[in-house]
Length: 65
Image (cartoon, rainbow, N blue to C red):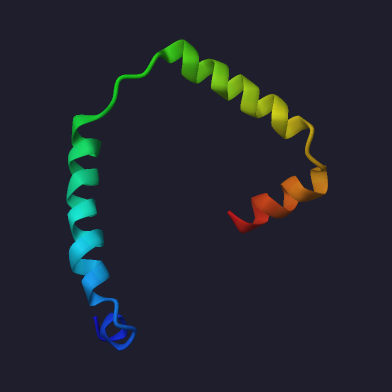
């Protein structure tokens, strides 16, 4: 809190962050409807895209995760 106050960001916390956190929590609890096939298609698409990446980049990303 002291850092937020020092950077004059308490209004941001109270006016934006906290109200947004409440909305996001309600959304998470309620969930969303998704089409399983669409998710599976997206997974295949993303995996095929990863194959085109330079293996050195993939190794670097895996180390950081």
